[in-house]
Length: 226
Image 1 (tube, rainbow, N blue to C red):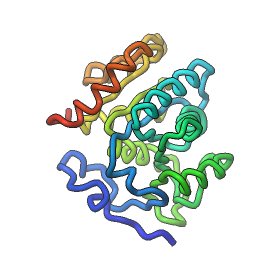
Image 2 (image 1 turned 180 degrees about the horizontal axis):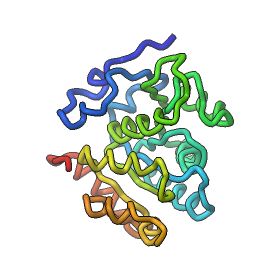
Image 3 (image 1 turned 30 degrees about the vertical axis):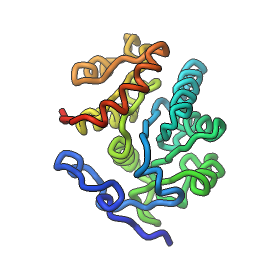
Image 4 (image 1 turned 90 degrees about the vertical axis):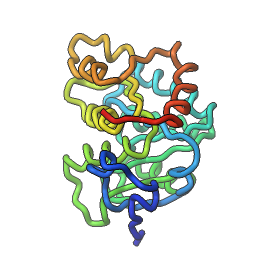
């Protein structure tokens, strides 16, 4: 059975804001250096991804891989799966942050993908073996994903999407949050405009080159959380 690691042993000292919702322990399997080397950007979005959303996710992941940035996502169906699979296919690195114990893939059809990530990349869970799968595990997972990521990119999401949890947590932590223009322009959604009011930034494909240079300069400076 995989032993847990103290979160602050893995990530270094946390400030008071980071510590508030951080799990005390994390279970890891794979390349642990991905938590300490280079930059990490979370790609998140709808489980029922549109064709356009898939294309946007693939384009952003390609840009991240070309800049040696590790792609973080949650192994869920839809955008998460696209993010992991694209990073792997392009020879990049990816981290899966699970809402289940390390031995359990959710959805079950991602079992082979999880095995590959654990072997060649990194899988992380805050849930010990035997922990039952519960709905509130996944917002907690999103908080942890925001904690380990230097920035979060929201590709697409509905009004009640769990993706919102990660966006708000990343903002609370003072991390960069980018929301794709198509999400912001959707009249059925109210949360993107609220997030923008708290510092989230609108992202289009043409912004990609500038964004990829902004992230390292932002993380190198002093960051104050909202």
